[in-house]
Image (cartoon, rainbow, N blue to C red):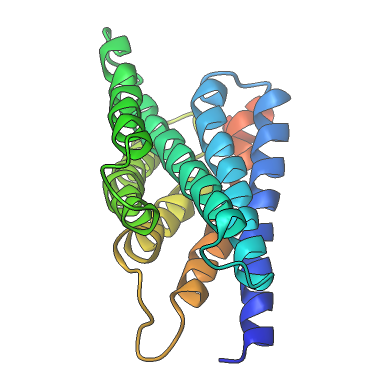
Length: 230
């Protein structure tokens, strides 16, 4: 794949998360159904941090900054924003899956403790920037996406069981998109059959963004309630 074509792939990858953030942030801010609004703020924060991480990494890649002082600075910024985005994703999964538990504050602290431990190791130079990025993808990206996808599937199933609630298909699509994200943005880091990994990451971002268009119904009381006419 040519560098010019890869540039457009990268732009689509980043802009998808920007659109996802705008959709979710506007929806949860203006929600008439507040039950899930606070939980999905975390998913919106994930999309925002992820788009900024992609922007920083894109500037480094396409301005020919390698590992001089500027290149390393952008790499560190991109890595830290990527970690923060995946911490928000892990937080989203925990918030959603523990929503009905009485003592959920215990679980809320877990992503922060992991992030604090990672930050301590990163700032003390225990591992190099590239190694830090790989560790962050696996520890936060993969685990956060898997947990969040399970939480989305669980929410969709529980809404389907309710007689007076219409379950938005966007919840199911978000779960599918997060599984794809966990593979290509969490585990995989090298080209697959000669195709750059960013192409697959772009597809996961597009799926998550497309799902967000349908997900907004979850925050609208009129759209989610089934009305029985007699």
